[in-house]
Image (cartoon, rainbow, N blue to C red; front, side):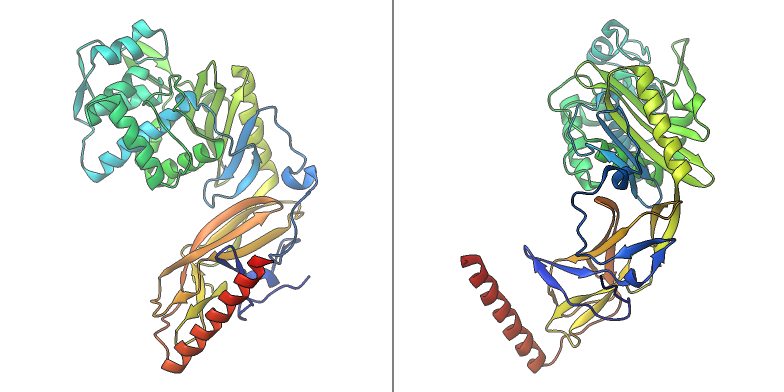
Length: 418
C-alpha cells in the first residue's frame, strides 16, 4: 500500500460533495506503528485492535487525552443517555462563560427562591448545599455548592438569577452547547434531575470536560476542592477519585434511577492529562472502580507522539480559478496523537474539505480538517488553514477550471443514473 510524502500534491476524489485528500506525513512512522493511506479498510477490526484487549462493564464509556483530544477507548460513546448530575458541568460552563465575558461577577448574589429551596434544597431529599429559603448567596458560593456538593438548589438559584427561570436558562445551555461543538446534547433543566429532555453522550461529556479544563483553568480548580461548608453543614466532594487516584482533580459524578451511575473524571500523571467518562453503571462502587481502571490502563499503555508541526504542509486543497491549482494546508495547532507504547497502533490520516475552494484564497483561511484514526476509532481532529496566498488566476485558467468542473458534474450525473 503506497505512502505519500508531504511535499507532493496527491490526487483528490469526491465523496458526497466532499473532497478527501490523503494526509501528508504518511511516509513517516510513529514508533513501529505506521500511518497508512486513507483508503485502508478499518472495518471488521479485531477486538484487541480496537481497544488493546481492554474491556469495561460500563454500558457507555470513553477515555480521551486532554491535550490532543485523542480517543484512547470508547464503548457506545455516542449513545444518548440521561446525564444525571453530570449535566451540571454544562450549567457551570455557562456561568464560567458569562464570568469571563464580564456579564456577571463572582460577588453578585442571587436569591434562593421557594422553588429552588423546595425542588433542590433540604425538603427535596436530593443533593443540596442547604441554602436557606429567601437568603441571598454569592455566585462564588453557588458555584462551590454546585460543583463540590452537587447542590440542585445551587443550580436552580444560578439559573433563575441569570435567566429569570430555569427553563430559559436551559434553553441558553443548549444554545451554548452548540457554540462549543456539542451537537446532540439537550437540556431541560440546570441540575440533571429526571427529565426526558436531558440527554448527553459520554463523548460529548468528555468534550465538555476538555473544554472546561482548557478554557477556564482558574475556575477549574474548584473541581479539586475536597469539601465545602455552607449553613454550618460540612460536605465532602462526591468525586471518589480525588482520594483514590493519584493526580485526580475533577470533575463530576451523577445518579438517577433511569440513568444509573455515571462519572466524568480527570487526572494528571507524568505531564499527561486523561479524561474518563462512564455512564449507566448499576452500582456506585462499580462506577468508581471502572473509571479508575480505565484511567490506570490509559496511563500505563499510552504516550503522546507528535504527528504534524503547526506550520507543516500536510496536504493540498484544489482551488477553482486560482493562480495555482492547489493551495497547501497546515494545521492551526500542532497535531499530536496518543499511541500505544508497544508500537502496535496503525494510524490512518485524511484531510477533508468542501471544494474546490474558490479563488482568491488568503493565507490563514480555514479549509477543512485533518482527521487521524487509530484502527476504526477517530483519534484526533484538527482544523486546517491555507498555508499561502493563492490569488485569482488568468482568464484562461478560470475557463479551464470551469470546463473541468462541468465535465466532473456531467460524469457524476451519469453515474447517479446508473
